[in-house]
Amino acid sequence: MTADTTLVRVEATSFTWDVKGLGWTRRLHKPIFDPDHTDRRTGAAIKLCTRGGSTGEYVSTGNAGAVAEAAKHLLGTDALQRERIYSDLRIYYVRDDPQARAFVDIALWDLAGKVAGMPISKMLGGYKTRLPVYAATVDGAEKGFLSQIDEFADWAGQVRDYGVKGFKIHPYPWPDIESHVQVVRAVGERVGDSMDLMMDPYCHYRTFADAVKVGKACDEMGYFWYEDPYSDGGVTPFSHAKLREIIRTPLLIGEKVMTLQERMAMVLAKATDFVRGDAPIDGITGTLKLAHAAESVGVDIELHGQGPAHRHLMSAFRNTNFYEIAWTHPEVPCFDPPVYLCGYSDAFPACVGEDGCVPVPERPGLGVTYDWDYIEKYNTGKVVYDL
Image (cartoon, rainbow, N blue to C red):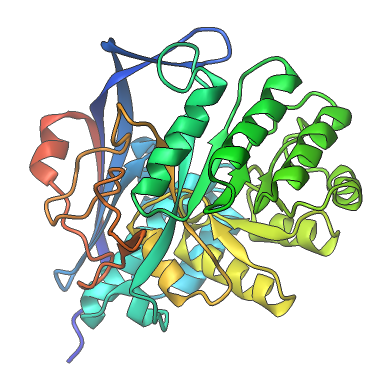
């Protein structure tokens, strides 16, 4: 007899953790790397509990209050009805807070996997067990390592020596466009013959002409993709379709559009070559839909950032290339909260094997064990709803 999967309790906890060596300027929020700095960050943790005793969990950056507000609407419903829940939350409850919807969706997938006794990857039909990594740098720093152009090339060389096959530059927020051109060339000249390279200005360039200049430098160096260059916010199909006509480097556009429909609209408008997927924004359910939609028109999906949900999804996607480990820096190995008791980690480079890959968790659900003692110790607020 199947255990009762009716949701009867929602717990959402806000907590903090510190990243040592990291600080920020007030202007443009530029990173500073200095042992005397500490950045305090905020995360959210959710537990969804059923009448039969099953629990779905998820921990990441986020707003615990918003997550709890979204999840309370599910009390009394069957936790396994993820498709209906995803649709209802998207339409009726959290249209303006996609991260809250995604938080709930990922926790529901974790619960379903535990009920089934299967990792999410197997529930999705996953077949990959090792995922090739690319390392994405922090933003160009105001102070410390990665504040100079040649340091990006130095870091790329170190990353290559770890066996990693891909490297992405986050040059923002240098004000002069020539610095962006120079860093594209410096990294390309250092490692371009042995790594796939990506450039991600994060919608920094003020003019279309600047986006073209950097794009042509990417062409010269044979970059794998050019991501969200233009300061329209990455949402204007016309300008990106025009950019595709002018440069050869494939475009990856879509980090700042919030729904799978908008992302596919960019693809169908010929405004991007790859499509961006993001489980922390659209959940596992929405990201799975996006991957299948992209596959139907022959386009690859690349997932934004790291985490166990993305590892499970990538395991099941044919049309994808790299697992992103975001914000790598030699002096700060991990920006994520230290909330895992099971050995799971995205701390770079320790998490990467000699093959340049990371493993897909094999235990049921998300396949991770969270450190709830740590979360409670650094708790800054908890919201609980019961049926």
